[in-house]
Image 1 (cartoon, rainbow, N blue to C red):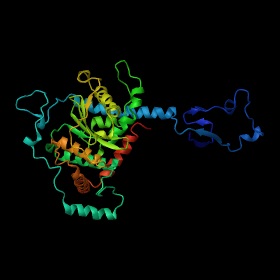
Image 2: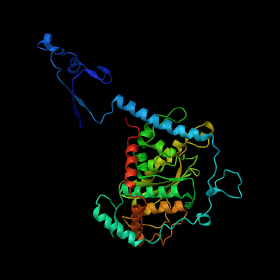
Image 3: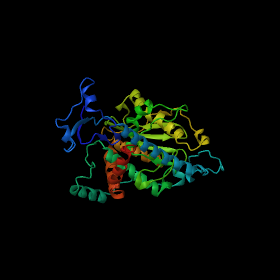
Image 4: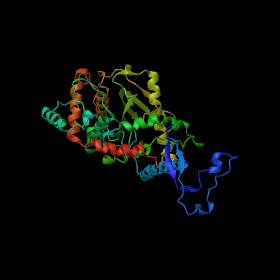
Length: 393
């Protein structure tokens, strides 16, 4: 195990006198007397000799854990404060969910996007002039990582998040183009963090009500809509949000799209290459979301009345097998297009999603990122840094 070496010039620790540190006699064992300076009378006039202490950088100290807990509680309280501020508000359905036949009923009615809004065409022909402009610019900026090669290539996390940020900006500017005004788009870090920290969630001890478990870093931020920082919605899951879209990276070899329906307590996985992993492997990959999403809704409820609307019972999920498949290497592109089209209320057409169209979809997305949100990666990095250390001291 790797260790840090520190030279300590004082026997008083930062946590109090001699806290967390033994005397030299104790260090050497009970039968070994403490070392006495050769010249005791003059030792106080000499500069203190450094003591060598080995610290395990992988082992959290009590102070570290206290800071993490304080940070965790701070984020949780901030999210709950936002929820309480909204709890007195009468919940209203968005315009896209209204029906002349339900009057003031709170029943959720989804009306086809085609009959209400023109939206936009996610498969519109690419502007070749803009594509050339992007290609020319790429020659001068090697740091802008994107793929315009003919051969399908893996999309990195930054590519995925850049397109999610484009959808966030489009939705923020024109929510009427989408099938509902009660949805949100999450970046890759959401799924990554939730899967990575699921064991901590399961291992943490709940209270008598089944609550008090430890959630992943950034959970409160996503729940309360306070991220991304450049496009905050401040919409709360369950209260203002019904549909959640997120990309999921499976073992750094395959991308899938996830649609979480809070009202239906159900998750739909859109997988462009279903043979990439087995149903058993998918069960394991989906388990964190099936358990932690309903838990978060109950944990964050601002009142007993609101909490009664939810349950700690896990969500269900399915993986449809009748959606247009992708070529190997295009799973990331198809994942993002599945999310976009479903959010727009557009069916997954075999013609639009033909494997031969993978290159044109990739080029169109690269041009749109370049034109609409050239600084997407800067925004992404800021939120990534904040999330990764959400509960660290």
